[in-house]
Image (tube, rainbow, N blue to C red):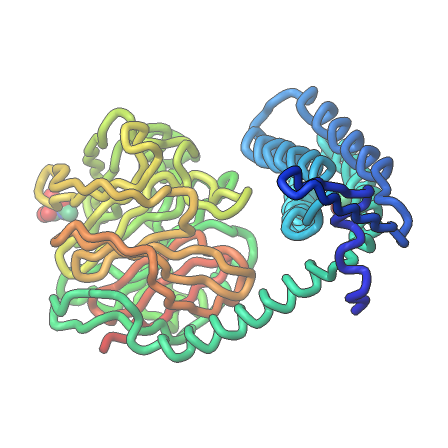
Amino acid sequence: MSQSHIFILMIVIPLSFSQSATGKECVCDLKNLDPPFPKDELTKVETAVLKCIGSITSEKMTDLDRLVLGLQQRIKQLEDDVVMLEKANSNLYAAVSLRIIELEFGEIQDLLNKLNRTTSDYHHQGVQAAAQLDDMKGAMVELEKFDKMQVIKKYRENQMKKTLEQCKDELKASSPPPTASPGRCGLGQMVNVAGPRTSSITPYSTSYAYGAWGRDMKPAPGDENKYWLVVLTSSNVYGYYVRQYSTLSTLLLGLGLKDTYISNSNPTTNTIQGPNMVMYSNALYYNCYNTYSVCRFNMTTRAISTVALPSDTGYNNKFPFGHLATSYSYTDMDFATDESGVYVIYGTTSNFGNVVISKIETSNPPVLGQTWKTSLYKITATNTFMVCGVLYATRYLDKETEQIFYSYDTKTNKERYDLKIKFKKMQTNIEFLNYDPRDHLLYVYSDAYILTYELIFQ
Ligand SMILES: *[C@@H]1O[C@H](CO)[C@@H](O)[C@H](O)[C@H]1NC(C)=O
Ligand SMILES: *[C@@H]1O[C@H](CO)[C@@H](O)[C@H](O)[C@H]1NC(C)=O
């Protein structure tokens, strides 16, 4: 570390000040021994960023709105930060800005990759932007060499230390976590998620990335061991039949199935939209095609009852689950079962796209029961489930790890954002997640894999 250089970049011009009271004068004359800060390079980066923004905003906004918007906002942010970095080159210019810019590059790269993957229309542009980004990255690496004060290195070291300490703390804190889950339903605090206990690809192999599965939470006598599986056969959005198996092993082997059709075609009135459905008392509860309504499909009579949610409820991919720039398509409505019945979890405009929970009374006809409004922004969660009247939300940490981070207690209306219960994923995305109060397992549909995890209570 060249400590001798430490102030050279801070004071690059002769500096003088006078003390009029005494009439004495001090003059400091510091020489900059280093090459001057390459302002031109910075300007080039800035211009490239501007060009990048220009070419992207000129594109027609399509269904890629969200992705492009995210990219735009980040590039705008990057631009602002580069400008600040430039203005601030006479003091601690490098300290935080360079690190932030580095992170922003990472995020932009990530978004660009997704953009590139999403459609061939944007292909050309994606390649161009990536090339520009590469150039900018190179330039920024050069600029980073001017970090004579080693602030970035120090910052990184500190970050690493912090992460290690956090890691230690989390290990210590892993039992008990800060969840004040009440001792209802004869269960203590939820302390851990173990597993996966079972893991298998669906009998459809990798054909369908979106789907749902589980058991009937309130089975008719004789149906206790039955399993159901629904795959979204059209565009990862729509499904039109329910497949049932007599046991878990027949499901895993793909034997002895029975299909019950909601409709003959897909999608059409009352077919399934989105993956987050549940089976309760021999009826399937789901978001039906192109409406803000809950549909209940009677597996015996194939009759359908509907319950309308508030008219500002998000549907057709308005308030889906998601993470960063990805949303899980058409996950506007999530159904959940716990010890006390069926709930629907959704977002409304009047609640700013935040999660709303409604009980569904499973009477005949079904009706909307009590409703709770939360502050959880729906798109920041991957999925939710309910245990003993408490809603839990998970979020994406990385490809291998999901974390239960949030809870809302419908008895006390208390919310928490500080839960830190992690579990290992086998695949990147979770399209469906639900709790079965009969076996305390979480049933998960993850990129064509079906898994169970065990919830551990204190
Ligand atoms: C975008 O995708 C194409 C083909 O799918 C690939 O050749 C190219 O390298 C990708 N560009 C980036 C920036 O990932
Ligand atoms: C399904 O229909 C049957 C026959 O009408 C009825 O007995 C049963 O209660 C219905 N199930 C639900 C969940 O409505």
